[in-house]
Length: 162
Image (cartoon, rainbow, N blue to C red):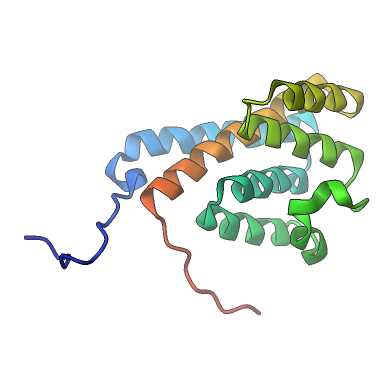
């Protein structure tokens, strides 16, 4: 018997809970990507900026909440987090962060070949091949997590700020 009324929207299946082996594999990929990024010299703040920008583009509230908190824990400033969606319009992001953000956007919306080529070429000017690969892998991974949370409709818990 359903616990839903005829007017209530259908509940979503939390696919991470429904298929834990698949989700665990995604978590393992994420851990490998995080290690790859660190070995390539992408600092944790850059990784979190990628996670946040991709989550902004995808509209994933759950991941935005999680990665905003993670970015703050790594020492990211509230100012930069607040203007991340307009990163191109400020000088507050380093050339390597800008390159990583452009790659993340191109990875998230790969249909525009011109933008993709431009982002890749700009990245080659300031990032090593290992850093480019790591930045793209971070974007690929957070895109996957965004889809898990969006399709599951993971709720964002209310938190009391300190």
